[in-house]
Amino acid sequence: MIHTDGVAPAERFEYWRHLVSRTLLPLEVVSESPADFHGEMRSMDFGAVHISQVSCSDIWTHRTAKHIRQSEPELLQVAVPLRGHGAVVQGREHVVMGPSNIVVYNSWNPYSVLTTGDDEGTIRGVFAMVPRAMLHLPETMSERCTPWVFSSKEGVGALLLGFLGRLVTDADRFQPGEATRLGVTVLDLLTMLLAGEKGTTAPPDTRQRVLLARIHAFIHRRLADPALSPETIAAAHNISVRALHRLFLTEERTVAAWIRALRLDHCRRDLANPQLEGRPAHAVAARWGLTDAAHFTRAFRTAYGITPQAYRRLHVPGRARA
Image 1: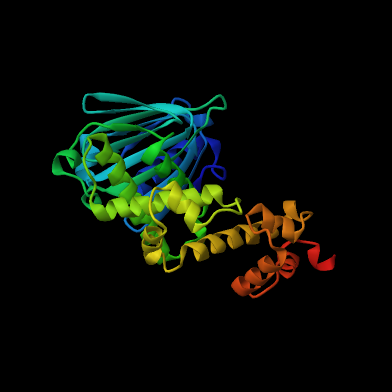
Image 2: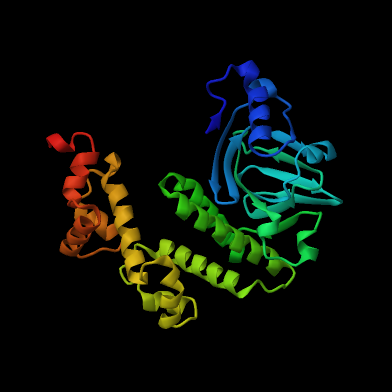
């Protein structure tokens, strides 16, 4: 985690400028009000995919031909603004960034990025850097020297936005092998997003993995619904239940087991949340679609080796004395 809170105000911007350039790519960062600057960045690697969550004051970012000569890793950069607005200028194109879109630009041509905070003067967003060589795109597309812009409100763009958000939120919970697989999913989603812009068909294995990512997102959204089942999932995605089970062969769990594990994990986190200590364990379970209290207790004990009530006593201050 990089943040400026512990740095003297007069040194904050220079500290940020140096670390961002070293952590991401050689580039120039400019602020109109360096004395008032604040910033925070959390960076994570998911295999070959580097993801950063950034919150900071208004800045300009410039990558020049000189910077490119210093380091030319040939990356596509994916900017997903969550607060504030901005613009990317690359080649002869100028595209606007905002909370409703995703902008993709490259590292091997000079660019400028201007970002402007919201009413509180803060920019917040998620940024991913992806090696060009790992995307399954026609050469004419991968050589493009101007930015792409896509909606983050629908289709693959919305799926990519949600997926990157979950990766940032849950980054500390992934094992190295899991992180690498999740990075492959980012590559697949980006390939599908870029291919769709020109009507190009992505490779079959990429389409299959993107379909699986869609299904994962659907399950996350409907997790609280007790009626969530392989049948409802298959119907929502216009595939057969058999095809759904085939997709999950790579997950090393059946569809039902994957749903159950996800629900139990949400319950576990709620039970350890002091703000929810007044909510009975069976109500926590029902919140995540587990409406049979006895079955929930058995499943929780099987998964974690302890009852829900005992788990809560261990993790909520004061519960052990209650």
